[in-house]
Length: 294
Image (cartoon, rainbow, N blue to C red; front, top):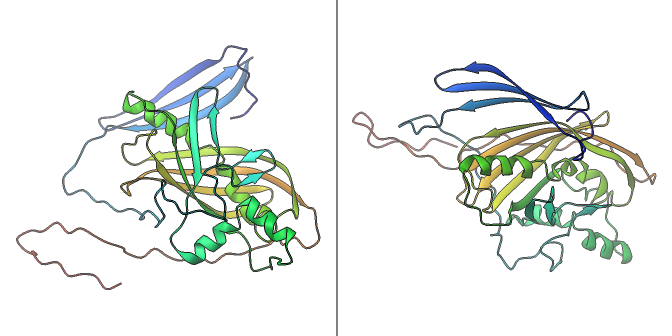
């Protein structure tokens, strides 16, 4: 998105047919308003079909408690509005664009160490610590990593392509705040001042059919923030554990330290993936597969 959009003026869509093949098609789309290009998109489409014995791998869905679990995070009994940055509510129940009712809740990891870190992203939990004699130390940095349950809060009898469009809208809902997690929550709570945070570019990949009105686990991480820009990655899993879509966003994130004690140069460890499970396609030459060494 290049310019501010107003609903009071007409918008003109200019679509260029880039390629039409047997399996793939490509389009470029420009939207103009008041003779200015306000939006640009490059779109690729694939004819979906089930192919036997096709190659298939994915990252596993993280182990989290179900969305209807009685577990709480950060000692909060609230389902929504636990994570806030100024006027931005990260886990919000709201209607976006005056059209789509969205329910977004913080998901709770089963890993106790990760859950303890996620507690550091709950504002009320941090406020209690600030008001007590206990203080956070510099090791208690909130990781740039987050889980959220999210869905369109309405049952919809619509074409599958509409669910894709609705997921596209969900994919831009508060995703950029993941880049701010280490700098505005945990040890750095109330130590920095946010100047501006907006999306610069946004990419969305669909991997499988999806229903946007069913609960999806949104796993979001930010590997890099530098020079006022944040790099954010997101993955959507359905409740069966299928990775249905992935997101990449670059954000503008301008902030200034409010306190000298703020720690704003951070490096986090990361690990390579490990095999969790596999299915073997048996055949006459190998009916008893050997489990790989992990």
